[in-house]
Length: 250
View 1 (tube, rainbow, N blue to C red):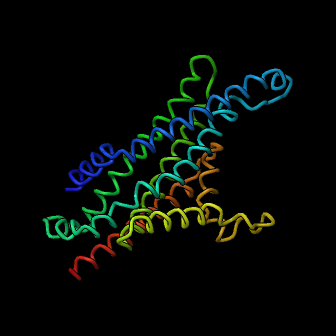
View 2: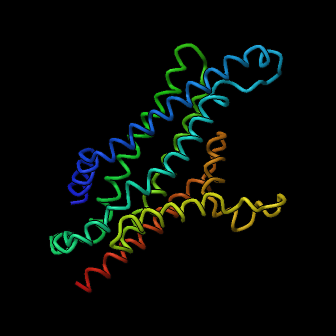
View 3: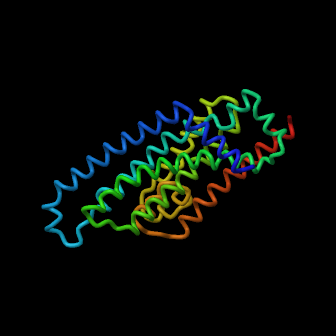
């Protein structure tokens, strides 16, 4: 049942003009950023040749591109998740889905998997850009794979937040705005830190960007991976509980 719901939601996304427009705009923006980064790297070749342990093309092109991709996901994920449950609640189709032989767990995991697969397609298309550089330049594949892992985990966290907030309201636009606001808050929550001691505070640990930046730099730490898995599990658990409450009320 999970795979059936996921396939239906994924098909619905690919049939939506909004999803195609967002995908096209995202890839157009990322392609432009990629070309600018490559051009800047070529212009820096003479200076980099004079440096010891100079940063390579992975540090100056691939990593910045993945960083921009994270911001693109931050902007687009609320638009993709805001209708997942709120629209079905408003139209009444969620009541039909709840009356079907499907548990709230299966419904939530199916919808989550559907939108996550769409985001992974977007990430895969972005990852193809730096991979093309392997034709003429050496890439640090370990650092690149760590950055892509962080991007996938980040997309999973974004989708879980969006799905939960979509379950709280029957207004898709309100769900989208709330999702963007919460994700932005969790992204910049450790900005006010002043010294290194504050960097290890609770607010710093809760920051989505702090854990992503560590993976983007190639510093693979199981703590960062566990953080994202717990983050995803927490919001999926809250969504399942919310849907179970709606089922009991209907």
